[in-house]
Image (cartoon, rainbow, N blue to C red; front, side, top):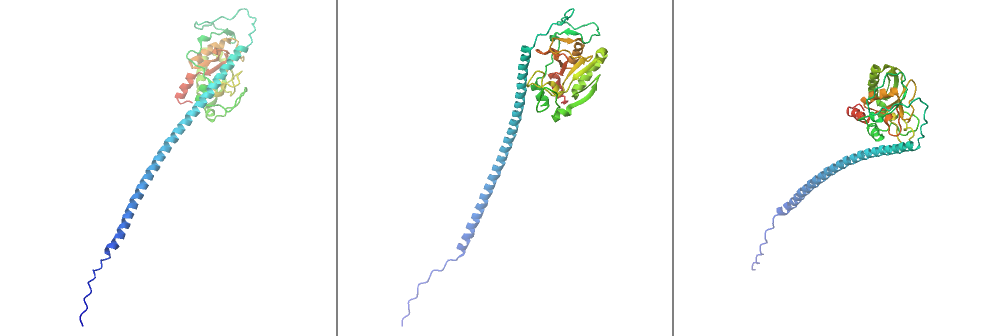
Length: 303
């Protein structure tokens, strides 16, 4: 028998190592790409969070500043409204004031004019003198409600025509009751110091006036006499009403007691405003700390 032809040789089978390496490489590449993507995403999110926090912080600061400005504007508007109401009340007082009946006197009081005030010694401390308003309160401004509210705040939440206690804790902390010369009063501490200097000078130069001095009140949270909305400066403990020999000076009669004329010069030198020079309602027994003095005390940290 003849031999069968030999079968063709089969090609050698490839090694499986290439296939087995490809899969891990692909997985590794995926892991690396995933890690890079995660790192990039995390970085972007962190930066986004920080940027958002910065924006929020800036917005909160701006909001706080706006709220503070709004509160200040509201306080100023409230004070200006009170000042406007006070002006209206003053005009009403002028329009409705009854004429003063002429008193039976042997001669009218002399007009002091703009000359330096010189008066011979007299025992009649309550003698009525005709008032020359232009001589007093030079360089001293009467504090309006807007000024008092801005410097010291509201003494209390509501007011009437009668005295009520101060409820503002900050203002209450500044008040003191003290014996000053012949009188005992409750006022702002720096006002009491200033009043003490006035009365010390008065005692040295005019002991007779000093001995007969009294008070009709100082601290009194209420509305201005005849007003429905304006707050009296007595409410902040920066004003005082004084008497001589127990007598009140008549309100809005155009004259003033001789002793108060003497006293007014000492108060003016201490930076106090004298109520005798009010435009429409002369109030000679009334003395109050001037706006310039209040701002000076504020700058010195006394308020």
